Length: 81
Image (tube, rainbow, N blue to C red):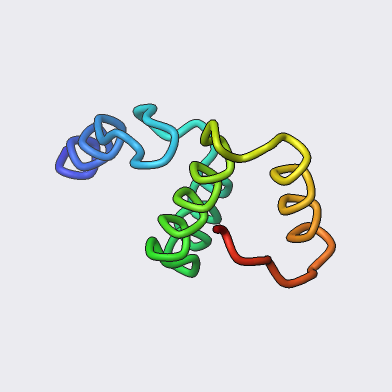
């Protein structure tokens, strides 16, 4: 009986990644959690700030395109201003 009660509690827990109870794809969610731990939040915040700077009105579409493509081809970024 205790084992059944324990399993019911496990089913009621909501997954932190997919938000489902029980988790829809435990393997995928476990891999996502591992990747999130490896990729520091500070780096994500820096990327978000960089992308937001590219959508400012003072930045031309050509400059934004050039900077984004420079990053995808592993060229160093130019100064933002």
